[in-house]
Length: 203
Ligand SMILES: [Zn+2]
Image (cartoon, rainbow, N blue to C red; front, side, top):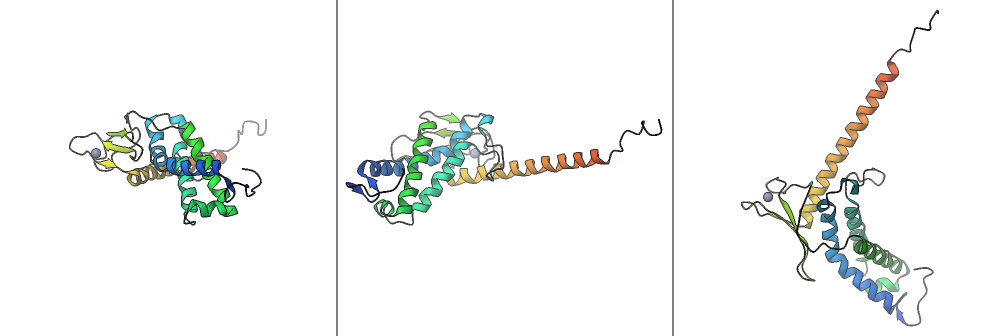
């Protein structure tokens, strides 16, 4: 949205059409965010990991980072009681449009998978086995569920548990990355102390 102006016909800084898109984005975000948490772990593609620590994250899937961003925007929008209030405020209208863009982009890129899938790289929070399975939402109000397939466990990992587990993985990745950096530093240090080739001396 460029140059915020009050449209002649609409709500706050939004046209009715834009406001409808915002309402749809807020609704979509509710089911999309739990899915985005899981999505990067059921495709299994290692290349779909953020490998740099540029933004403070290591080894988390881009879908995960999209979920974080959408959640952050939703939380920021919470300062207004109603969406109508947000779009009547210049900053709120801008913020809400960020949410629309993020949600529509993520939804187009990583639409909710409607079949069950094995979850990879993520252990069950209860029995610690690689037994998790993703179950798609069955209707509009339903949310994504990840459940342990072990008959004696059957633990359901809700979004909070899944988020916690992913953060643990990220911590491990960070520690591994730090160890790697330390090792490289030590190796470089050793190389520097190796005396230069002395065959030339006095030749
Ligand atoms: Zn389990």
